[in-house]
Every structure is written in C-alpha cells, then in structure tokens.
Image (tube, rainbow, N blue to C red):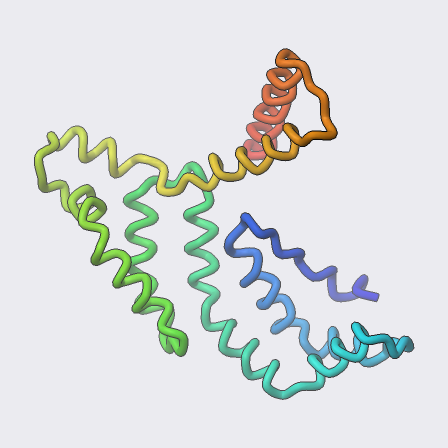
Length: 188
C-alpha cells in the first residue's frame, strides 16, 4: 500500500519530535494517503473514521498549520542529542522566535515565558553570578536534557517486570550489552 510513498513514521511517546514528524509526513503525502485510504474496501468503524478524516478540509488546514512548526521539531531533535551542549540548545531556542512566524498557537510565547522564569539558566548563559568563569564555561558545555536518563528508566522498567526473573549478574550483563549497543548505534 505505502510502498511507493514510504511508510508513515510511528510516533514514540518518549521521543518528543516524532509526533510532529508524523504530522509532517501526512502533510507532505496527504494526497497519496487520501487515495490509499479512499481505496480501502472494508467499511468497518476504523476505515470509516479514516475516510472521514482524509476527506475533511479542516484536517488539511490543521496539517498546514502544523507544518509551520518544522523549526520546533528540528530544535527538539537537537535537544535530544546528547552531544549538544546547553549553550547550543539555548541559542537554538532563542532563534525560534524568527523561525516560528506565524505562530498561531503561541508556542514561542510559551517558550519565552519559560525561559524568562529560568533565572538559573540565564545566569549560566550570561556568566554572571557567584560561580567562577571556569565553572560557567563548564555549565554551558553541559548536556541540555536528561532525555537519555529518562529513556534508560523506561528500558529498565521493561527488564524488571514481574514476569522476568533475572539474577543480579544477568541484569548487569543486560545493561552492559544495552549501553554498548546504544554507543555503537550513535557512532554509525
């Protein structure tokens, strides 16, 4: 069905930009997806809802609005990269104001309010406060998010379910294999 246009991306709950990327895919491939859905033979509830959605002009309008947020998705991808430092992330957010015009849902206003309330972040970026200049330099080079840590908790939750019986040594081996796998995938 989707072989000619590529399969739609699957949003992942813990990957923030994947929801926007899925919307961008449907915006870009809208006419092809509409043709595929309208050619479904089944008349079940899900098919009827899908047909109703792809034939709704309001959906097209909303997809068009979402496409204006491509810079936001790029910025989120940047934040998720553990090799990107705090100063690069901060500058990326500051540049969003020009890139998100027009901004019908007020995403940048929300981001700007959050940045204004982050007094510690402003102090780190400006390098003024009680710390030494060397400490500020180190803080500016720190990783900007803890998404990797949160994802590792999600992975560990899968390992430590009631239906799995690992010895302590097996859990340790599993974590070593997982970390090595993660490091190898980042290098490629």
